[in-house]
Amino acid sequence: MGRQTRKPSLDTHLVAGNGLLDRRHLLAVGLAGASAALPLLAKAGELNIEPWMTTPGAPFEGYGRPSRFEAKVVRTFVSAPNTGGTGSARTPLHRLNGAITPNGLHYERSHNGVPDIDPDAHRLLIHGLVERPLVFSPETLSRYPMESQIAFVECGGNSGALYQKEPADLDAQGLHGLLSCAEWTGVRLSILLDEAGIDPKAKWILAEGADASGMSRSAPLAKAMEDSLIALYQNGERLRPSNGYPMRLLLPGYEGNMQVKWLRRIKLTEEPTMTRDETSKYTLLTPDGKALQFVFPVEAKSVITRPSPGLDLKETGFYEISGLAWSGYGKVSKVEVSADGGQSWGEAVLQEPVLPMALTRFRMAWQWSGGPAILQSRVTDETGYRQPTRDALITRRGSRAIYHFNAIASWGVSGDGKVSHVYA
Amino acid sequence: MSMRSLVAITLAILAFGGLAMAAGGTRVAHPALGRTATTEDVAAWDVSIGPDGKGLPPGRGTAETGEAVYLAKCVGCHGEKGAGKPNDRLAGGRETLASDQPAVKTVGSYWPYATTIFDYVRRAMPINEPKSLTHDEVYAVVAYLLKINGIISDGEIIDAQSLPRIKMPNREGFVPFARGQ
Image 1 (cartoon, protein in one colour):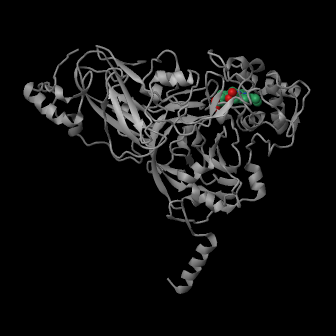
Image 2: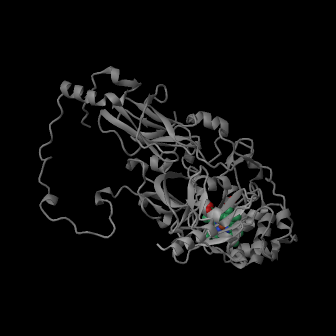
Image 3: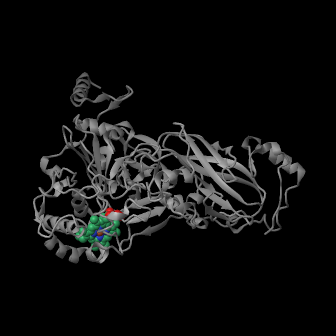
């Protein structure tokens, strides 16, 4: 492997151990580096007149697709035995940048396939502890005042493999890919509930999907009134079928399972309905045999998406460590990165805008010397909560909780630049 | 716009509450375009059953009749007597919850309410033809699942009255989460 070493000459740019650099000095380092060592020459034949410059390109098409050279950027999925659509499809986090997930790559968790819903035949019923039960079609909802929210959706089971005793040999997609972020546009649920007339006895809603599994979950009425949407659009276009077409519930910051897709019914109730997915599933079994129930917002968390497994380092020198941070309790206020397994930390740059309940991209400059490294990130959210170490989380919860794993994750970089999932 | 249509619009807005105050004092438009649902509409759609059993339909079954349903519609995916494989195990595992061993979470060991079994099986199972069972068949197969978990005996009748009264072994096994746990 052709190694090249272009050291930044100024140690003052180091902000933490094992090569983490202060990004504000990056430009200066680049210039200093350039004057110290001349850049390599472009290879012969690198600057060609290529065929696409001399022949007309492809004609227009109705719905655009990614370049054929990006064929690797796809979801990976598994389904339960005897089923084709009971399982999940994961977002290729390590092959994306920015904070918004393209619609075709938004993660998906479905319990019995993606229904092929005719919007003209679909209805939303709001009933239970209300004065007037009301029925809405997608078309009537389209006449309501709309608003947009950029919000992440994360499955309650995301990163669950990190509860295991040994580190799973998986990449960012396989470990953390049940996570996506989109701009959702739709109607405030509170407007519809007000119109139905809320009985003061109501404390919960039951939300139910029109899919073959009839996915259903209870959520606090207070959340429904605070900031929830009946989402009709995802990143500007109608929802994708796999994300709930023609309408889904958006409960910003709450675990994905509650944000019921293909929404057909909201029932106001006094007590939670205790559905299968809030008892048998999405409850956290602790070592004493008791299970924690109704874990609604996902806790503050961050992951490094590059470097990460599958994106090995080919040569020493400068790299940008980049990743995602989020919190179901509000905004990200700080992300720190370590290249030495948590012995020292440097503060990453947060990409604006930093929004509540949305993914926030962070970046950190790094000079890889060619030695072993352990890359970690840890987020602090606006409530002051800081992402815990894996040891701290497992000490508290044990290793059988399955859901809501939010501790610090680690990528090990070996001397030959290979990146793999490790515990540190 | 004529004075008359302005008055009409104002009246319409007043009639529907048109603009209401939302939290924080902003004014929110209330188009009031929903159609009022009739009691029959609602009854046909409302299939969720909470722990109080309200809304459970007429019908009944026992573990004996349930075994026939299970053998015809479930055993291929959930195994002999709910032993599992290839899909979820449906029986046993009670001693595994409070231990360091892998937990076997089943209807019998883990589920806090028997009403949830009715609710879930009726809406979601069998997974290849959901919502195909009659109410009697659902009651019966629920009775069978309760029996193979040692929660009821053979002849016990499961219906809208008896189902909500069943105390599941792990009824006290859940605590509401608080941040930091």
